[in-house]
Amino acid sequence: MFKFLKDKLKSAISKISEGVEKEGKAEETAAEPAASKEEKGFFAKLKEKFVGKEEENVIEEKKEIIGEKITEIETRKEIRQHVGNKEEETPKVFEHEEKIRKKPKAEAKTEKIKKEIPAGKEKDAKKAEQDIETKEKVQPADEAEPKALEEPGKKGFFASLTERIITTKIDEGQFEKLFWDLELALMENNVAIEVIEKIKKDLKEELVEKPIRRTRVEETIAETLRNSIEDLFEKSGFDLAAEIKNKKDKPYVIAFFGINGSGKTTSIAKLANMLKEKGITCVLAAGDTFRAASIEQLQLHADKVGVKLIKHTYGSDPAAVAFDAVKHAKSKNIDAVLIDTAGRMHSNESLLAEMKKIIRVAKPDLRIFVGESITGNDCVEQAKTFNEAVGIDGIILAKADIDEKGGAAVSVSYVTKKPILYLGVGQDYKDLQKFEPEVIVKGLGLS
Image (cartoon, rainbow, N blue to C red):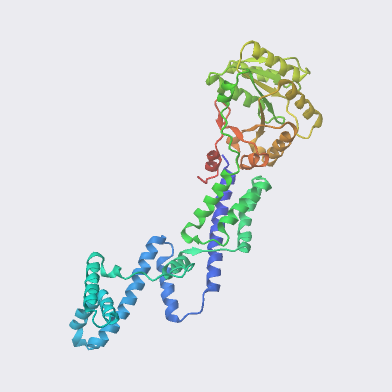
């Protein structure tokens, strides 16, 4: 299902990912301030070490490396003041270095307090010193010093450095250039223009001028695309069996519409079989009195499924057939009536008028448009026109199992604002699958 579109999307996502990384690097290089050779060497090594790692690991390792450098510099300065640089003083160096690292910070605080206490207040100074000692026992020396407050809105050094190293950004102009590959892939697979614009808008909101982790560029694009496509489908929460059983004034009437060869008759037979398996009785109405052998075809399906067919002769009024089927169902206390209609092009005004007459007479509870998934944009346009003419309530997409492109499946619900109810996924009567957005997402390789 949707193999061609799936492959195209995968390729487009990969290209966008590479483009984002490339554009992000170019922008970073242009914005990087001039630095000394020593600084460039340090950051170059840091980038080489950390790019591609997870953020939490990067932060800890950077802190460790930079912290060690700072500690080493400060330690050497203090050592030189006490023991100089003589090689024979090496044992003293190590001994003093250890003392410096373990020197409690509370000593500095005590000295400060003593200086600030006026003469005659030595007891207060002593008490303050004892308080410090008590605090140091409870709280480690290296945590006793409160952290310096950062300016509001400013990131810390490590946070800024981390973001620069492991994230990238693109602007709107770069996005427009990069989106072209995905736009082309969607157009090639008959995705409606309205849908392409929505996907583009969603991606732009997620990618443009937003820091994206370099290791998650492709994942971020795929995730945004998945969420965007899931939002294309009208959420109906529709349970046909429950609707039929809950209707007090039986029968529950369903009318089917679509163009010639769209799979209406087969879909009706599949739905009748599904209802029968759920303990719901139904009768079929042969409302296609125009196409040769249409009545015989529906009769064959009715016999195989085990339901009754109400029919007239060819050339009869389809509305009269629908009326008789509803009347029969009422008299026999049958749960549902499924009305077949002649296939008609969505541009044929006279046949659309005939369809409206069937609706006036039969008063269907549910009007279903049946379209071929493989016809792409044609299917979407047909559904749109039928909806404008008679107001469809839901959609069945036939032949979804052999649809390589998936344009109709992705587009038809969003364009018509009507839910897809079922997918035809095979030739057997059991091959009518209740629609779930996850089915499309999985078929496109985005799950």
